[in-house]
Each structure stands twice: as structure tokens, then as C-alpha cells.
Image (cartoon, rainbow, N blue to C red; front, side, top):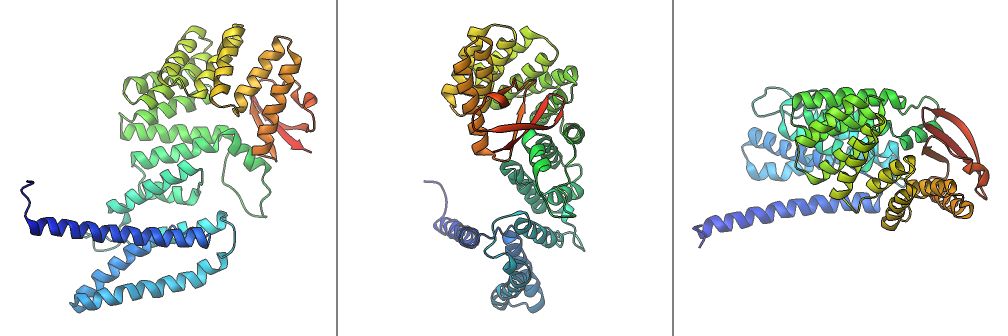
Length: 402
């Protein structure tokens, strides 16, 4: 029926089973060491790759396939045993912390530095497609899980300085470092002497992100997401006019509904920064039309309408946001401000209390809120005592003490 011979079909089935078995073995190994031993081994794949290199080396040396097939796994076993005794065993029983994870990233990077492409006479990881893809994938994983290893990202950038995906992901990391929760975590953290997170101020991190996003766009002019993120960064840096221009280009260059949603959402923020109420409202409404169940569009539109004294419509959007996500702290707090403006003190206090309790439950050491004015909530919320520990622009830092 498919014009495929029985032998060819059998070969494909066999190949599929072999690959499936390999993936199952890899998955079982990762599950055991991570699930039972709480050891995050990101060098797992690199050791598997090393076994293939040993096999090819031995085959060329002995000309005996079966001997190579037996000896190569034993060589990897000996190497793995040495790594386990020297590097991994001290980590047994410890929680998955910075030191635990960093050892495995370093080990994987070290092994990949010895990768030698077929056409090269010496190790050249920069010319190997697999190494490039590994760095892309691992940096993307870090960004997704907010589990950043700065040395790892720096190494990816060093090896592939002009790769648009690496540039983009590195820029995203610095954009994340500029966020309120990352800045607050660094300022409130108690770390050993001589240890540093390597993070700059919010504006310094945003400037790094801006430069990297621009380089990613130069390397790939149709990189819509990089242009979109650049527009957001420029808005945060107070450059709303060029931000709006970049965001329009991003919107015009993509058909992806999610990118269009964030494009209009960020464009609304840029227009709002330029005091263009009608344009900002139109952008937020376009974002809401694309994603009516996303909370951010409701909250941003509600805040804009609140500032324009359209209180009824603002309240509708805040309540719509809370109907979608009852634990959204921003919607709770903004609705509390709106109730206070309407002289509804009891409802306002109740909303403030709920917002505060949610933040305290999520992060008991620090509360960071991006608003122009706390409106005396610290004095009105029961059971908690707040005191300011610093400020920057519109960011107010509030430290909790029971």
C-alpha cells in the first residue's frame, strides 16, 4: 500500500524501537537521580555523548566493533564513578540549591568543550550544531523556570556571540533580572561572604537587555518577539516614543495571536506613558479582544479607565480580572484603591487585606509593589507592620516584619 518493502519497514521499526529504548533509559536515569536522590544531573546527556565518542575511538583503534561495544560503556562507567565520588557524592541529601545545580552545568560545559566536529582536527564546539542546540535549549529552559546560571549563559554567549536565539535568550535573562521580584530578592537575600549574584540595578539590567535585543534583531530582522521585548524594555527605560515604533513593527511582522496580544498590551503601556489616552485605550482593547480571558489586559484597561475617572467601567474590568483569577494581587489592590476613591472604606480595607495576605503567603520576607502611592495601606492592614527600606522611581519597597 505504501510501496515500502518488508525489509525496509522492518529496519525502520527496529530503528524506532532502538531509539525509543535509548530515550527510555535516559529518562529512567534522570528520574532516579532527580526524583530519589535530589541530584540534578545536567551532564547526563554529555556523558551519553562521551560514550559514543569512546566507541568510535576504540573502533578506529581496534577495528573490532564488538570489543568497542563492550569496552566503551565500561570507560564511561569508570569516568562516571570518578565524577560521582569527587563531585556528586558531597551533594547527596542536600536540597536542590545553587551549588548543587551549578556543579552539573559546569561538568556538562566542560565535556562539551571537547566536542570535535568530523571536519575538524581539534575540539571546536562552536562549529558543532548539537552543541549550539544544547546551549539554546538549556538557556531557554533556565528562562522558562527562572533558574538562571549566569556563567552558563555567559559561556553560551562567548561560544555563539552572533546567534540570534542566544542573544535573545541572554537579553530575556537581563530583562528578568530587572524585574521587581528579582531586584527585591537580591536586596533582601543574606548570602555568604564573598558571594555575589552578579546582578546590576534595574536600569543597568534593562540597558544590557536593550543592547542584546538590538543585536538579535540585527542578526534576524524579522525576529518579531525580540522586537516586541525591545519595545517593552524601552518603555521601562522611559523611551516611550521609540518603544511605540518598535512595537508597531513587531505587530506588523507577525500573525502569531499570542505575540499580537502582547504587542498591543505593551503598545498600550507605551502610549499611556506618552499620555495618549485614546491610543492606549484602543491598544488595550485590541489586546483584550485577542485574549479575553487574560487578566493583564483587564487590569491595565481598568487602571487606565480609573485614571480617566471612568470608575464604573474601571470597576467592571477589575472585577472581570478577579473573576478570572481571584488571587491576582494587582487587581485586588487596584480595586481597593478604586473603592477608596468612592468612599467605600470597608470594602477597600477588605481588598487591601486580601491582597496583603496573598503577597505575604507567597513571599514572607519582602513585599514589592509597583505603584505611585501605597495610600497608607501599611497603617490600615491588621496583623502586619510595614516599613519602607528604599525606593526607586515609582517602585516602592516595603519590608514585612511580624
